Length: 191
Ligand code: G4P
Image (cartoon, rainbow, N blue to C red):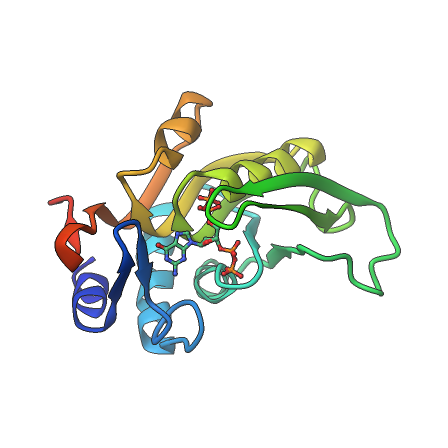
């Protein structure tokens, strides 16, 4: 997606050879115009797929997810990493280990928002090792919901997230695939 590539090149910073900082438009400050384009781009691909819910994880997955949900006219659920005070109903839960942060989060979604009638688009900002996406599809599985595809804004194609998810039969659809961050430069997989 041209607009996203340009934004990454103009505003992204390579922090380490495996970490890209994009806090001016995605992970801290959010560019609503770009998010709106991202929403349209994904929604156009899935309009005829009978999507009923968008499922993401807090915090940086929420912005792109909301714009996809807006375009498709369906609700957006974000898995919580910490139990909210008001989460008094039954919960779907999964453990997500972050290789980057070396921490494990219990993620959860209330059973009342996700059911076996749902056909879901899973959305996240980054795909690295795939652990967050795996946790989200596990929650969908617990609810008996089907997963149409996993939509990712920025995929680090040099990490193993995609292969892990594809091995399990999921469709991974990302807008920018980065093959390396070597020499402080972002290298994209040509589309
Ligand atoms: P994984 O889910 O694909 O296995 O990813 P990993 O554990 O490696 O990543 C943990 C967190 O770091 C995730 O955010 C992920 O979105 C983010 N992340 C991974 N690689 C990059 C990167 O190159 N740049 C940036 N900016 N973020 C990256 P999180 O901590 O779960 O949540 P949040 O930041 O959305 O709150």
